Each structure stands twice: as structure tokens, then as C-alpha cells.
Image (cartoon, rainbow, N blue to C red; front, side):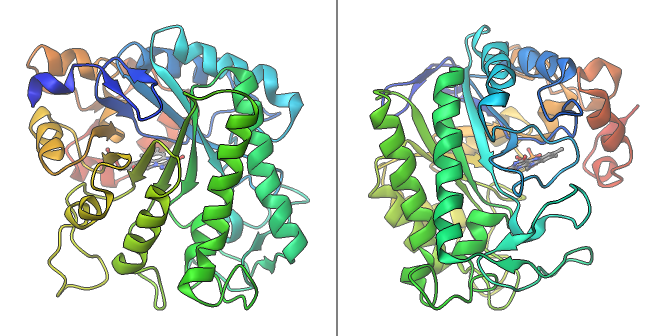
Length: 368
Ligand SMILES: Cc1cc2nc3c(=O)[nH]c(=O)nc-3n(C[C@H](O)[C@H](O)[C@H](O)COP(=O)(O)O)c2cc1C
């Protein structure tokens, strides 16, 4: 298994990674003022592309209303094509696959962060967060417009030279909001029952697949990231997710990427449920698409264990922010360097933020 991690991996549609390690998508808060890619971000991606088989970029906003984070890069229209081409090139020139994560923040967006932004969601239900505002419920025609924004971003990603896209259906953002019984209380084709809450994510997947086919890109990777559960009541349950996973496996996508705090989590909403989430999901997937795991994978032992649990690929997050040479270190049989500082080759706004995140020290990181 250890050796396997350093060998190439080929996705269902033929794109090949130089090893089994992906950089997890991580927001850098570091774009230029006009939301184009900054030089510091370019340097950061280029450094990790030397190590990883695939780079999944930070969440990239598909529209004005999608912007959720300060200085978050945008892929909303042709004006951003140069910026996105630089991003794809900074990764591909080192032989890594470049996959861009497409994102809409929906009701999670902070009021006032972006002027003139409309905070929208499936329904007018406020997120259970202190800062959150009650979103405006999207009209049916606007729901179709949002799907078009993702399709438009996919076409721009193809034009910019990316190897694929990852739909950000995780971490409570808009795609997840349509799947969630907490945020989606609609009574039309996009909500009301589990079946109808699946409409938005599945239609989105169909439309981005259609875009890739129209552009004659058979190898172009389509990935879908999801969070298996929500803490809210009502909220997404593991059984809901198993249904979503099965539906996704019927589509012609390449991978599903699980977003969890720990790659071997059991249920966070039902202590009595002892199923290891990835085991339950793998039971449904049955090799129909590739499965990527993330969450606390920061040693070779973890990475190997993740493959044993049925993940095809491992995504490294925080540890890869600390150590720009992590895969080389693993290959040499060394531990990752867990010092986060100037040597980490990070955009300075990101480094600045990480210095204020107290939780990192508890996870064994040294902040300099
Ligand atoms: C600074 C930072 C930014 C993140 N931004 C994103 C993001 O843009 N999109 C996303 O899906 N997950 C994001 N995440 C979550 C990571 O992709 C990953 O799932 C999480 O950090 C758990 O993996 P780890 O324990 O290896 O860090 C972010 C995490 C960090 C630390």
C-alpha cells in the first residue's frame, strides 16, 4: 500500500495523476483586490504542484453572489480568464492535474463582506451561525440561473486549461443547502422530499457533464465534494447521503470527495450509529467512481490506512500548508514538518490568518 501511494493513478475518464496524493481545496484569502489570482497564490500552487499528483484549488466563486470569503478568487466571467489560465498553468507546468473547485456560498455569506451582494439560498432560513443573515429564497428562474453560472464557470475552466472541476457540494455551502432539509423547505421541483432535494445537485451534475461533452473533453474530470452529515435538526443524515452517493454513481463523474474532520469518522449526529462513514459509503460506491478522503491525514500510516478503508486517493489539507515538501518527505520515510511559518511558502494573508487559529497548536502544529 505504501508503495502504491507513490504510483500513478488514472481516473475513470483517463486523466492520470503522478501519485495518489491530492492537495485538499483550501481558501487562501489572498486574491488581488479585483479577485484575480495574486502572485503569492501562484507561487503557493506552483510549489505544491511539484509534490502532489492533483491540486484541487481553493473554492472559486462562480458569481458575484457566490463570493463568501475575503479576497476569494473568482471565475464568474471572461474577465477572469487570464487569471484562471495563470492558475491552471502554475499547477500543470509541474506535472500535477489542475482541478478547480467551483463554489457558491449561499446563506453562509457574511452580510457586508461584498457590497451589493444578495444573500440567497434554497429557502429563507437563516444558518445556525451567529453572523448569518436570513437569505432571500431564490425564485425558480433564479435557481436555473445559478445552475447556468456553474456551467459558465465550467466552460471557463475548460478554456483556461484546467484538467477538471470539483463541485463544492460540502461544508454547508449553496449546493449542500439545496440538499439539506434544514436550508431547503421549498415545495416545488427543487424541494419538499428527499427525492426533490436531489434535483439541484443532480441537475447541476448533468449540466456540467453536458458542457464537458459539448467541448469535446472526454478526459475532463468532474468531481463532487460532499459532507456526509449535518448537525442541525432537521439536517442531512448519513442515509440521505448514501442515497445522494448512489445517484452520483449513476452519473458519468470521476470522483466523490468526502469532506470530514477525520477521514474515519463515525456519525456526528447519531452516537448510536457505529458505522464508519467511509465504509458505509464505499459499500454503495462499489468502485463505480473514485473516492477521495480527507481529514487528519498527516502521516504515511494514515494515508496507507485510508487506502485500506477503501479510499482511492488521499487529500492532505493543513499538513500540506505547513510542509511544502511533504510528499518528498514521505517518500524519504520522514515525518511531515509541522512548523507553519515563512518557510511554508504560503500567501501572506493566509499565513497571517493561520497565526491566529489557536486550534492548530492543539493539532501539533508549531506556529512561527
Ligand atoms: C485554511 C483552510 C481553508 C480551507 N478552504 C476550503 C475550501 O476552500 N474548500 C473546501 O472544500 N474545503 C476547505 N477547507 C477544508 C479542507 O479541504 C480539508 O477538508 C480540511 O482541512 C480537513 O483536512 P486536514 O485535516 O488535512 O486539514 C479548508 C481548510 C483550511 C485549513
